[in-house]
Length: 115
Image (cartoon, rainbow, N blue to C red; front, side, top):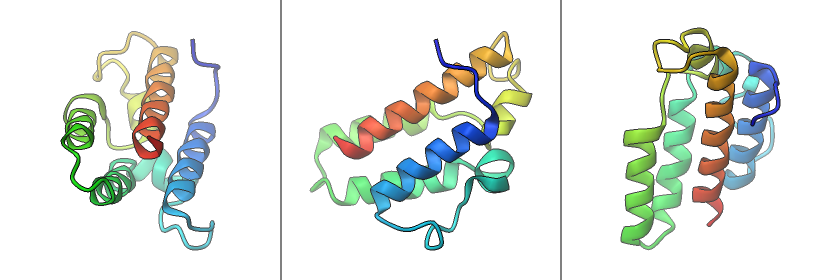
């Protein structure tokens, strides 16, 4: 079960993973946890990082399949806050279930990026 954190905690975790993968500093990364990932858009920076991952994979069909599955079947919501606030719309009974989904999604993204 995911530890109960705030939307900002998960946004900071996601930002750290994306910055680490893209090898950029805080000032270099265009999408910060404050507002962008929390309320505006978490899909665009995830898509960008996965595009970089695909480009560096020598077009390995297994990597492409995993990325396609992640984007097409797993990634939901416009932002982290959107998933939490509209948790019932996304099929989660509680906000805690939405946070668990967010945590698992960030962990899966990390595995794809660093595999």
